[in-house]
Image (cartoon, rainbow, N blue to C red; front, side, top):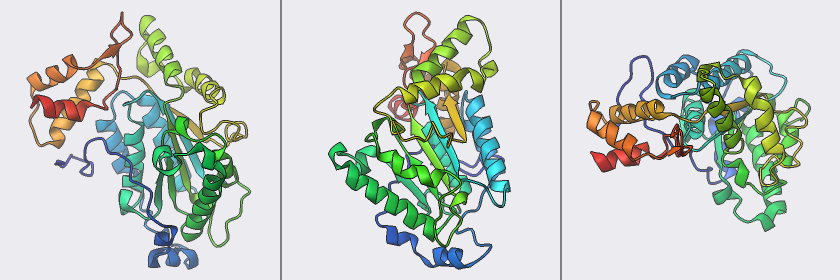
Length: 321
């Protein structure tokens, strides 16, 4: 049960992404048709950037780079009445660090219907692309789906989860949609947003964070310049990543690589307190401590970072209540 937070919309605990809508025809509702023929219609795109900033500030633990990059990128993109290309963000980091949470927040604060919006499209490799041998069929269907929904509404959000599990070669069909030169009849596709999520680069991010800790450098001093080259190389060298041989990185179609740092003990504590608040409960130190004691940390000697971030916090709290 969610509780109202001061200055932010009510919001639940870490959310899973919404499944892909059942058929492309669902996007062709009356509102979508009005978007096609109206000069000022934005479908149900109703961005609330102050609400997003508030939620990120209060509930996304330990991610100064992700917060800054996401908000800055969105502000510049939304305030531009005629963007030259779609906004393309690639989220990278260890499991449980907040990547899926942030992508869910984007849907919630950008679209009036949130994750239920017919203009928010989520793709999961396990659900939508489970058989690598069907790659050519998947490529054709994906291109048709994206083009059809962009025709219905240029202000669409496409979420691609677990990029490191996508069939290699699939993402190359998206490359034309991510740049400035593609034409989609009847709509301004350059107002679309594409979000790619993966764990690739997580080990490299963790290593930089560990080295910063050893050198007694504050984690808020870690810069994007320290992380971006290593993440890009990890993606380019990974034949199982969806960007493999897609040309998306090589052609600089990503507007931002967004790193998520590994979470330390005090960050996990923050997640526990947030989850208790979502349940309408007062902080309970014995529950907080029990969750922390049951969490595995690494490396073995330093015991510094949570192995699962905050991913299992909700289920652990239920166990200890």
